[in-house]
Image (cartoon, rainbow, N blue to C red):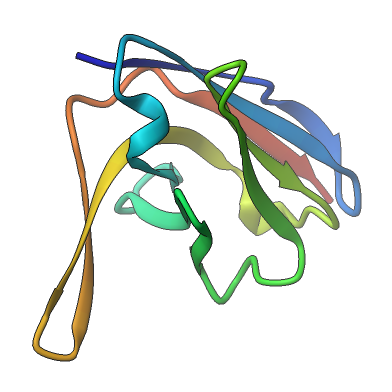
Length: 125
């Protein structure tokens, strides 16, 4: 079973950058899709970016052009590079393995396992 630990969050001014890391332990990580999610206080958790073994397959509209998801299979780590940060990016960020499927014309992304502690990102205006 794969365990994921997020890190790299912090306090940054609007317009700044952060790189989040999601370190995996256990086997099978490199063969699965991985996603970054975030949850702001009082809000539902939302999907931010998903990376398959072939490359990025999903970015939320609100982060397109600003965030980049990538992975280093040697280090068993997935990254989320966040540039041009905005106050609305403030949230706790989580990573998860993701099952990607298609039902008729709809693509679905189901996160696996339980959520970790996440890493807090705070963007000041």
